[in-house]
Structure formats: structure tokens, C-alpha cells
Image (tube, rainbow, N blue to C red; front, side, top):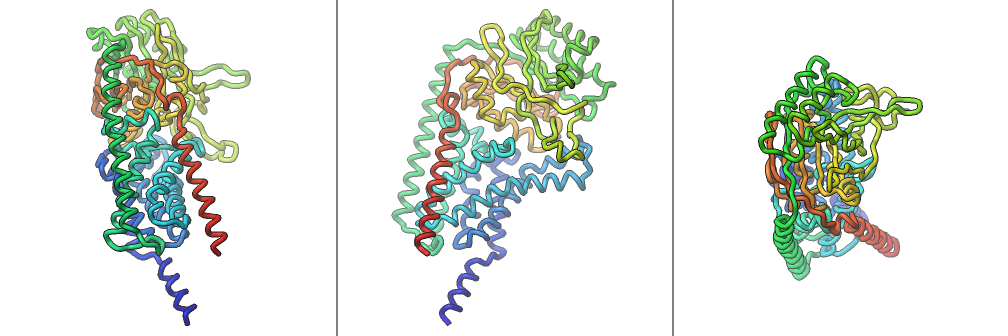
Length: 531
């Protein structure tokens, strides 16, 4: 009789109901709303609480399912634009592009599923959730940044890109430090909820003293982060006031992606960029920056169009950084690159940067030997080859670090350029693929962190926007609207200092993985010897 009652109780505990699924979906939606375009960044600080409430007293298996549900709801609503991009410009029908979106969302959801299962697997007192939640969260974000070439798109820390005082800790911890604080907030609020509602966690009581200690600790951490941010902003502004600066012009050509690679429009596209550049001449910029593949031809190989560009550079009378496809003649084949050229007013070439981190299925087909039926989404004559990571271009007394398109979302690529003495970071991109979706704003939000992490100015030129200037404290000096022809000129400071993060990288994130592994081993031993 007692055994039957215990088994019935266990089955009840493991059962998922509508409320569980509602709370899981709610967390996923709240997470998405904290990112651009909605941009309700404050929601990130509480977004995980509904999921945590749903996980209470569940089995690890059902916790995994709920986390998967949350992740799927989040990523499906966050990167919905992927289906449009593949359909409109990748020439994939909807019946093919939607399953790809679903597949990527499911993969990303696995991280939230593992997060949820891991919390339940740790047989600990509820107070330890306060530490385990942020440590596990950051560990999984970091793993996502490099596993299978990495896809660290919109980690939770990026929600705070426009809260300057909070993101200054990135010059020590990277974006993972901000993610840690947000996860810590969710943990503290969840413990308060359990205590006030009289609920337990895995049949263990949530004590008031432990909750008070957790809230006090979180408040201390937040105060440290805020005051560090205030001090760092002031110190960086003082550095800026005593540092040299350069004047740069950004050209946003707003070329229709459907026409960009059409030979019939190559001439008019090139003329448009030249004419927009000439508008900056009166401001006497030191550098004019064009977007990724602004010249839809092989620069220096297509004689007529190359001469037109060189003449336009000469007429403007300053240095230009332009995006263009390029190629080298290899031993047995032609090697294609997505490149950027730095050119002087007399047509002299200072150097070329070749994109190092290519977009899977956009610039090359991974596992092509086993997936010969797949093709690239972009138009071109062959797979692109990766360039050298960390390569910079010498420009007078400075070195320029160029990052093309989504390279800017990988912190280690920016750090490699800083280690190679880059005084300025330039991001050139073509976000026309994304239309008027939230993707251009999401992409721009991540760019801000590279400025703070490395204390470098960032110049960003995008074909259809968002283009802009970001100073070393993460402040957006100026930005363009989407889908508008635009030429803007601003002065940006040239700092040379090397931050802790630039020098040592993701030590904090790796430490989080270490703590998580130790906690997991500890939990395994407890389960083993308690049975």
C-alpha cells in the first residue's frame, strides 16, 4: 500500500501540465522581447523566472523537455528572419527554408534544455541555485560561441548594449560578465518567489536567511558593476580627451540586394558609391569606409570599373577602405576571398584583409564531401577561402583591424587584432539580406561590446544600415536609419591601451565551466553514495 502511494506521488511529481508549458513558453518570449527590435532590456533580468518556476520538483528528463520548449520558443521568435533571408535571397522555397529555421532553433534550444536538466540534476540546497544558475548559464553560452564553428548570436548579456554603466565590466569579463549578472538576478528573484509563496525546490525548504543573503549578495555585485562602470566611463573619457583622433566618413549606398550582383547594375551601383563619397569631401575625412562587397566585381581585375573607383578615390582626395570580392591563383585552383582593400588617393594599395571566419552555407558549404546536394546562399563562382585571423592593415602610424559581416560577433577575432596592434576596428557588412526585420538591430547591438571589451573606436559601414560610429566606452556617436542613402562624417579617438580582456580573453567564462564541472562531479558523488 505504502509502495503504491510512493509510486503515485513520484508519477505526479514528474507529470507535465499546461501550466508548465505555458511558463516555459513565457520565458522564451520574455527572452526574445529583451532583445532588439522590442528592446525591453529590463525583461532579461526576470525572463528566466517562469522557466525556473516550471522546473520545480520535476525529473531531469522532464526538465530537459521544458528547457527545450523554452529555447525553441525563444530562438524561433529571435531568428525568425532566417527563413525570409533564405527564401528571398538564398532562392530556397519556404518548404525548405522553414525547416532549416526550425532545425537551427532546435539546436540552439538544446543549450536551454541542458541548462534546465543540469539544475535539476544537482542535488543541492535551494540556496546553491543562486550560484549554479549563473555559472551553468555562462558555461553554456561560452560553449555555444565555439562549438561547430560557433554561433554566439545574441547572448543574454547583449540585451544591455545601451546601458553603458552595466557593460563596462566587459573590459574584464567580456559579454559573459554581463550575462552572469543577469542570470544572477533571475536566480535571486526566483528564490524570493519560492520563499514568499512558501514553495520548495526539489522537496527542500527555501529558508528566509538564505534568500536574504542571496539578495544582499546580488545587490553588492550590482553596485560594484554600476560604480565600476561609472568610474570606467569617466577614465575612458579622460583618455579620449588626451588621445589623437581621426575623421572618418561612412558611406551607406543602400543598394537593393536583388540587383546588387546583376551585371546590368554594376555601373550604377559603383557611381552611386562614388557620388555619395564625394559628399564627404568638404569635411576632409582621413578615411572613407564603404560596406562589404560595395564593389560587386573583382576590384583591380575588372579594369573599367576599377579605374572608375580609383578615379573617384582620387577626386575625393583621401584614403578609402572598400569591400570587394577577390581571388588568388592557387596551384591547382582559383581561391576566392571576401575582402577589404585600403587604398590611398593616388590609387596606391596599403593592404588587403581577407575575411577569416566565413558564414556556413553563405560563403562555404561545410561537410561538402558528404552534403554535395547543398549549395551556398550567396551568389558567386565558388566557395570562399578563409583569410588569416588577426590580420591588420598598416595605415600611416596606425594599424586597422577590419572585420567583415558577422565576424564582429566573435570576441576572439577582435582580440586577435588588438594583439596585432590595431588602434581602430572597422566593421563592414551587408545586412540587406535581413530586410526590415530585427536582425540589423540585433547585429548592431553586439558590435557595441567589441568597443568596450577592447577600448577601441569602431567604424561600421553597412550597405542598407545600420552604419555608425561607436566610441571606446560603447557610446554610439552616430548611427544611420535602415534603407536610406547616407554619408556621415565623425571624429573618432584612437586609443592604444590594452585591456585585461584583450590580453587574457575569456578566463572568466572558462572559470565558469570549471566551477560547473566540479559541481556536476560533486552532484554525481552525492547521488552515487546516497543510493
